[in-house]
Length: 145
Image (cartoon, rainbow, N blue to C red; front, side):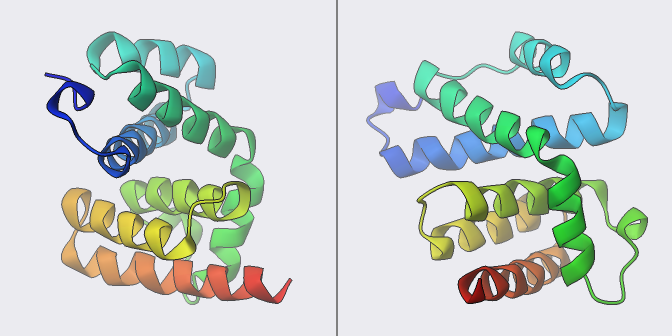
């Protein structure tokens, strides 16, 4: 049953959308498939209501468009970590969150919290702290600019 039909809040819809966008970014990282083709293929198996799908697509497409710049930001803030050594799921979460920090009006606290929760759910407890540290550094540098 779709989240909307359960009376779920807009926050829950956005949480699910972020999860879908992160999964698409992860799949791209693993396959290096064309972004548009990957998106079409992803939605053949993933079921979501229109609002959830639309927000997920917006996040995915925005991050995909800026992937090189997002990766440069990650490298700059991931002290003592080579980019290639980061877990692919953590890269996907970081790309998504940094894109959202840069290009949406979502409160940074919400973005950081959602990213940490994604890391805990899909990666590890340690990844939650790691993702939080990098995103906190990114957020502070964005506030200075």
